[in-house]
Image (tube, rainbow, N blue to C red; front, side, top):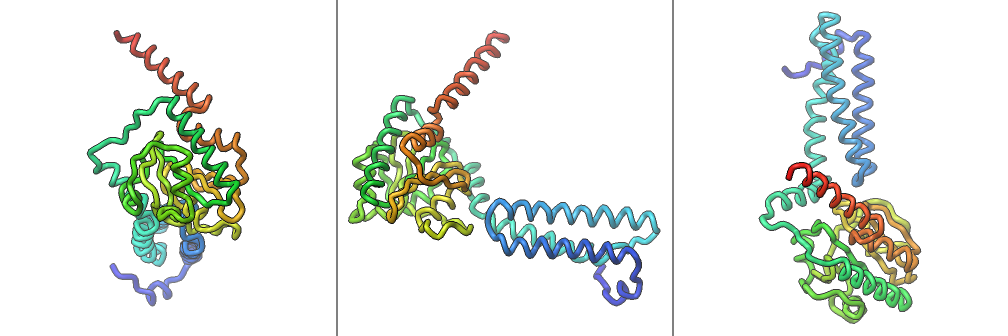
Length: 290
């Protein structure tokens, strides 16, 4: 049934106030959506919109049954039909990359596997630290993505050049040399291999410190969409930063950087202890049944 505003206006009662309050809340949520545009707050706003939609339907039924007025909150219900469509479209547009990554994981026939020993990962860590320290001293800009779980898909790798080379400090430094053709993009690292170089990443839409440039925005953007560790060396200041889950830590010392890289590789003392505890637990369970 189409909403008749004239009839609704003629039958205004105390429940019209509830109608207006609910609609005001909806419009505030929509306004905040356009303000925030892109980050975790958007998800919270979309979820809040869903909660409001459910609240309108439930309150409408309760009020209608209590008063014998099945037309209670008709304006709110009418508007909510379009709010539902708005929610769906916004979710698809704002989180299109997230959905794309999910579908790529589901449709992919091959599973991401890394056969790299802890010793090889420690060597890779040392090479990354050496390269970052050298580039920092020389004010050479760099962005290194450590992708330990295979979250970086072909759509990003194809924007650069595939290498598949063993990771080393000299190789990293040569890639980010300002005269090298791949120095503007990001290097993607898996295990002790450089998978690709010169890759272009989606920039974050959040407001960031004006001191941080495109590399920092790209480093933040990729960690908002994937579970990777981004390392950034500033070309202007030589400051080393790391980003994970959209949160940036600046002014990294070599010790702090080592902790972050080892954590990303799963070879930190804490990660190793958790891994060993899991293995022992599996062995105990196996012993119960065999």
